[in-house]
Length: 609
Image (cartoon, rainbow, N blue to C red; front, side, top):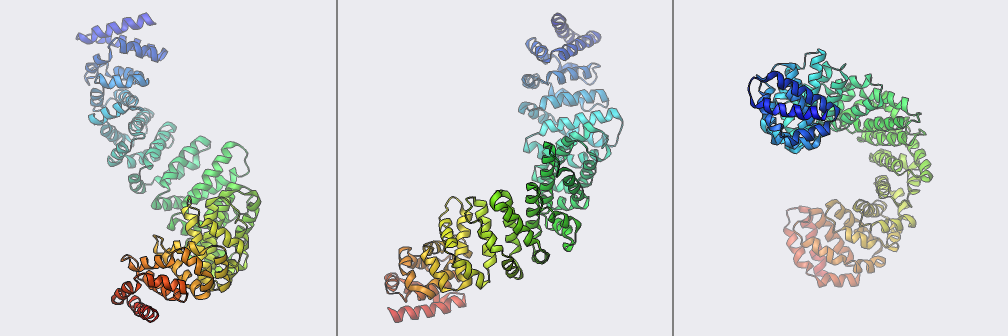
């Protein structure tokens, strides 16, 4: 074989330099193809060693009868990574791209293979094809050949799809180029017309998976019937691997709200529910994987407002009812998906009120009770997210409190998991909003206040720190109770509320100032030391001097200045700073409430100075 190969390579070198050696060239190429099939690596090394590649461009002339065989040899050689750069250096790409102007199917097939293999995982290869304009010609062929369902044409389409995939894989700018060429509608059309062709549909799916990651592709996908085609194809699949391939395309596409709705209208949800039913009791690895992917995708579809509302159907929807039945399931994955789905359905007041009235809270509480001991953090987080969202409408708060939500949520107070801590705090804060009794009951719970004060220092977890401060403030603001104020003072919470008043978020600044105002009004004597050590007076001076402070911040800061002047040491601190100058300037403030309060504060400062 080795001798034949060397002889063939020598013959090829001679033949390519003389004209009219057509038959001997054909024979050499046949010998090369045989050798490549037998041992691709060794043969390729020999081809490179004997300098054959630079002799091939003239043999790729469209008029040359052996052009398809030469392209076939290049395709086989370029299967080896070490040969792709040399193929580019030998100048093979421009003549190969020229061959794409031919009509002959065999020429196109071998040329497509050669270009696809040269591009595979090769920056130089892709660059050369890009410069020669190869992708555009292949995209045009796909468009013009898309309707032809003959088997030979199917093979050519598969090769061309593969070539474009190799050309653009993991390269955002080349993917964007294909999108601009209008490749997406063509590929969707191929999927519809050639759904019986397994190799071609697989190629289309991999191409979709690559292109769907790009944000700019979503609009083009949304303008096609991709949703119907994918759902149709999905329903035909029996093999796990094929379903996985479709899932991998659906997940990035379903991030787009328009496509979410199209997928819902194409019947994807009903099919996902069937999949869940088939997989829920399965013990094979693929059953577990399918259950997770299908239920995750369901939850993703509910993130779109229109798709979610369509499935809710006023709380009567069969999909909504089925998803609710997942919450009490014995399967952790379904419990998780069920709780996340409830959280997604609970994104407007109407849905929340309906769900609370139809008993979903009890199911979520039972689920949480099961996970106090079992401790599945993702399920805890999801169930708390759902409860937090359900507690937003005012009419739901008292019902949820009566159902014992606060008591169950407090069982997770020992949790060391920041995501659980964050949702726990948010749920309690939503529950006490406008609820005097609940705010008083929770605000006098020394264990809770102690944990809040601890979390107010969680510098590694800004979300937990922010929510703890906000809940501490909410307990005081909504209870207006001296007992709550005392519990917060004794728990060491005052300094954190003073720090909160310097937050970059105006809403948090304001909540802190109102809570501090209530502390000063209800128990100034007990808070005096904490106010002084936290530098409250200095903070107020800074807030009033800062031009960027919002009107309500200035207003509440002046209220607080007046309140703390009831304490002698704090009064002295106020006198020590130039409050009078700052406040008198605010008398001309454009906001009437601020200017009026400035006049009152100025009088107070003047009388007591």
